Length: 342
Image (tube, rainbow, N blue to C red):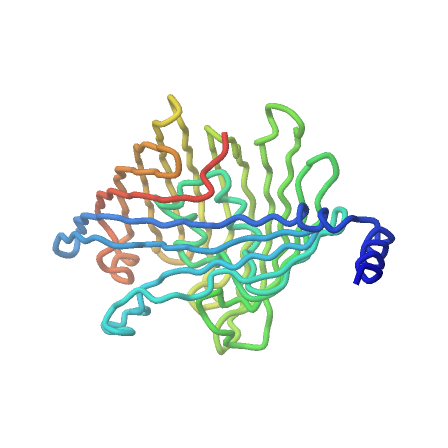
């Protein structure tokens, strides 16, 4: 037995690392992200309403070991989707996979495979950070999904100048099955032009996505960019994206403009404002404008907000999206772990 143990130790030493180093190199982080909300709505074309809801429940973990990484993220979602009135066990909250991927980084190259986060949407959220108030317009208008089945390849630029990435995904988003054999291709770059100092949060983003959706393989393209300040206590975002193909119609051409600012004062006071304009089809009077303002408080891993959202729609858009035009008052609570670092 002694000889066997000695042989194992010598073999480990020959490999260049003692047994204790392997455990020291392993890291893992639990993930908790949950929203609770009370919302009162006064639409211009329907009766007023109010309700309590749980817009998001995320539970998961991320682990890393010597360049290898993996992440599993579970998401709670109401079982009634797509306008259905009855889901699983009434309208209960069921669990589905949001992310499930494995990856490896070697020097400046990083690859991920599985149900992966897409490249652009998470980068835009780094500047906004208050996802409990509203998602990016690309996500809320269903122009791009935040995650999908596929693979990513990223090249990290030297001296912390940012990264350039390529993604190949099914194109239907993580919540839908693949409806055609075509794949979506995304190319995104996020560059810090002034790294290594107080202006590191300045980020310039350029992105293009092309592919198809639906059983008829309707062509879709998204292209544009953003200028961001992704600081800890201050975030500013300005973005514009062109839209070719929307809601299964390849002939629709539109664009989306969005701007937001959020800040933290006195360590706990939170302020946020955001506006988006989405021209759904430039050939028609089909557009929506959404303006949001919010004030909140952060204590440790808890964030709570009071927000007001005003949404204005063109007459043609109002007919397509009944109940959307109006004013909404929200009281939102978020539990976030790990908490934001100073």
